[in-house]
Image (cartoon, rainbow, N blue to C red; front, side, top):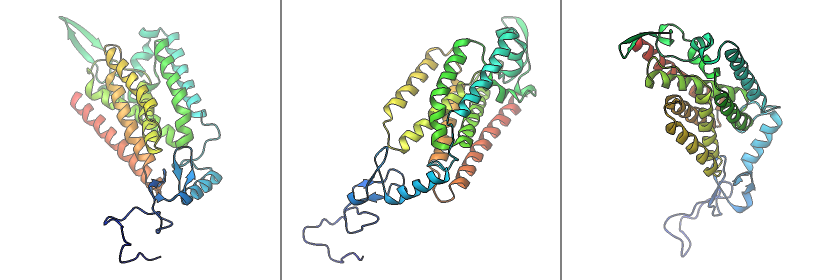
Length: 301
């Protein structure tokens, strides 16, 4: 349908927004998925806001094909990955307790220490166990599964149980696991750069903060109420800096930033060739994390 060359009497100089399916009708509402303008006849109620007929049709096809709204394979049990991760964390925690707790040899082997060697404190020389810069690269990964205190693992696993199933349901199992592990590695890279080289860092908190960052991206994308998740994030950061002597703010901030980046890559990838865009974005974040870690190792070595 063509648009009249001469506007009708009383029309404003600036054209009113119109529906993408009915260009002769004004439309002031946007589809919450594709953000195209839709008129009242094209508005389809969604869990949050409205969707256009095209997105409803695509969503129906995705549901039938077992895909989530963001391209991931739909999980039959969205809590399964979180259960497995919790199981690994608890298993390592039990081994640590069984071998001495805080003084367990496993803590020195698995927890993250940027550098080791001889350190003088108050005129006394200490031989600090080897760290990542000394060749224990696995600590970047194993530290996110290592805990000692019961309150530490308890809080982290509770947060994982609350956040994990929601995100796996939204983005699929593979993307969720990638988000969790790469957020943890981003936290490790931040610890490498910003913590005291001979300090010891352990726990799943970095990965958990990554989940918080990604959940915030999801809530913003669907135009949900951000106050709840924002309050939870703010409280957790408040505790982080209130007990900064006991908590690794470096890991928490690093994991959160990693979660924001990865969440944006997964959630905002264009629908056309979505999987390729997501893979490219995730690999880009992984390369940045690896480059930052290698650069820090070169400085400490």
